[in-house]
Image (cartoon, rainbow, N blue to C red; front, top):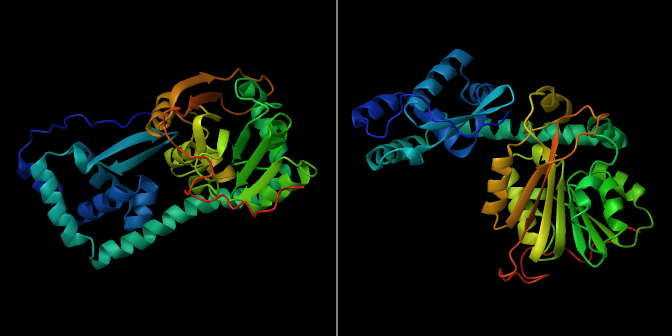
Length: 345
């Protein structure tokens, strides 16, 4: 399960600065804090980045966590750590800035950054490897895990026949096909060429569907181009789900609606290796915060009814609205959608 970031027992903001000198007195701990300032990492990933045995990495993490230099959260069976220097008093933050400037260009820190990029790239490649080989079986896999057309339950409050709807992370186009039956236009986006090819075959003949290849965190859609958007079973594949939600909000017109469907927290760690999942579900409070931080309101989140034939975790649906008073012009000078892209025919 996912939990909020936890403060370690015994931490205090009024400890003497000498205590913090001791906590940062080891160069390895400073390198570790430098890495955690830029990325959230598991213990095993920290070991890869820092080239440390697990016992040594855990010992340094414990010291930093007890000193409030890092926070941690549980994600399934793993613990994820992130730097949190902002919680320190001003004198301790100044101390870290001095050490940071001394360390950041060192040879060891440079090597750490190279290995950190490799670790993050491997996370993303696991998802891509799964998609490149699973396109033909994707629809059946979804049905086996989550039941027959589960998404229809979540669409009842979304449909309007005059809208342009964005199916963000469209996969093989099963949801796109359902949306196209009632929407004026559907813009379907996916990063996987294999998935888009499968969607193209499914949607052949649908004149109101346009397929676009692109990352969900950087959508090939102009500001305010969409009346509504969906992110259905997408967020758990992304390293930064909050970025995807902000991008979807950017692409909505004022008054537009976003639907998010994904898994509630679960402990099926095998999904990471089998399907490249980055997140093992989401806590409702965290999803609600991401939606609010993206400038959306009227947020409603509920658990979807369980399909007794489904073998996967429980799902939630969240709906949020972009406030009408925000002045975002449709087809504005933001990211251009590339209208010259061919429509699916």
